[in-house]
Structure formats: structure tokens, C-alpha cells
Image 1: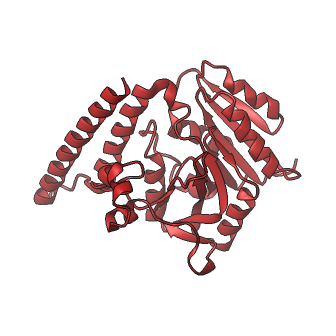
Image 2 (image 1 turned 30 degrees about the horizontal axis):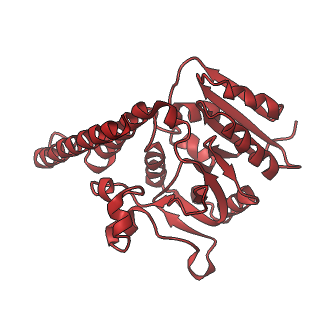
Image 3 (image 1 turned 90 degrees about the horizontal axis):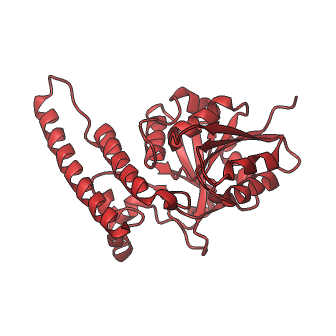
Length: 299
């Protein structure tokens, strides 16, 4: 049996026909080449997981009896993968022609790179802002969807949180980024295995920032590829469980902050531990208030 060139992993939760569009775009990209896909269905109730059967034998369906979250679902697929490269893609995302070849070429050109992400567009053609700087306390004010970043895009903090990139400097095919969106990324399977994949404590959101940070701590780097494009309908699946998605976003944001930005110190570092504890309490308060406001707005 021919070794597949890539393994695609899609975690599906009530994505409806969007899953078909995603798989169609992968099949078109891989036409004439060996590939495989695993659709990890997180207990969908709309029957969308069965769409995977339309793309057999390349695509296979793995059905969970409960919604185990995005990180755990991806890890399930990665454990089943046999290709050296793993395409992690949301079912509400589709590839534009040439995306996989372009991303794979960048991984080949940079052996120390663990994963790459494409330029991600909204359905209206606007740039989604998928190349980003490491999150910190100000990300909650100047993040990708926040009003302050849109009003003050030239501030250094705005540019640091979402890299203002349309094309490569001096014709570069890609640039190094702190992290790229998990909506679509192509990764070396060996690198994912080295860090244990996604941290399964993250049910939804921020697991991509955490993964990229842990890969960088291992000596790898992450790249954003200008010539590869994907189109993403943001939060298509989570609209069916909006309140749960809002809570998951804020819980994951706090987990990331308490793990990477203000972690606990050793017993010998009492002063530092105290300062970080205060920072975590402030972050918890801000995120709880933000979550409450968003829940009220969504109701």
C-alpha cells in the first residue's frame, strides 16, 4: 500500500454541509496523490459525520459518543495518522487551489519549522488575521476581534497581537510567527508526537496558541505562508451551542494565561509567586466579567 503524503484530521460537530465542502477541497488538492483523512465526529446530532463516507476509502469516520472537544479530537486523528504531514482543518474551512503544495514546500525549505499556517480569509475575502503574537494580558483588549484593535490598528500592541501582514517582505514566501490559527495548519507528525499533541485540558479555543508555544520551547518555529490560502466561516459549528462556546473561550483563555503568562513559581520564589498569583486573580476577574457580558449579549 502506498504511503499517504498527508493525513487530514477534521473534528466535526454539527458542521452540516460545510464538512462536505472541506473534504471536497482536500480531495481536489490531493488529486492523483495518496492521502487519507480522519473525520472525528464529536457526537453530532445533524448526521453530518456520515458525509465522511462519501470520500471513502481515503476518508474514514471516527464517532465519539460525546463531545470530547477540539484538542482531544485532533489527537485522536493524529494517533491514527500514517503520513509524515498532518493537515489539521476545521470542517467550516476550505482550501484554495495550491494551498497544500505551497505549505508543504515551506516545511521542506525550513527543516526546523514544526508547522505552518496559510493566509486565512473570511468568506467576503477580507483577511482574518491568523498570524499572531503570543497572548498576554492586553490580548483581551487588542485581540483579533476586539474593537480597540480595529480602532487603533497602528498601535504596537495591536500589531503584536495580530500581525498586519498581506504579503511577504522582499518577496519572502513565509515569515516566522509566534502562532497561527488552528482552523487550518499543516504540521510535521513527528513534531506533534514530540510534544504530545494538543493539550487536552483545552476543550475549545487557545489550544493552537498553546501548541505553537510548546513547539517553540522544543526549539522549533512556526511560519505563516503567504502563498497558501484557506477560506474560513468563523464559528459555524459553535453557533449551535453559543453559550457553551463563550464559556469555553474564556476558560481556555484563563488556562493559557495561568500556564504560560503567570505560572506558579517554586517555593523558593515567594515574591514572584505572589505577584503571579495576583496577576492570575486579576485575569480571572476580567475574564469572568467579559464572559458574563458576552453571555448577556448572546441571550
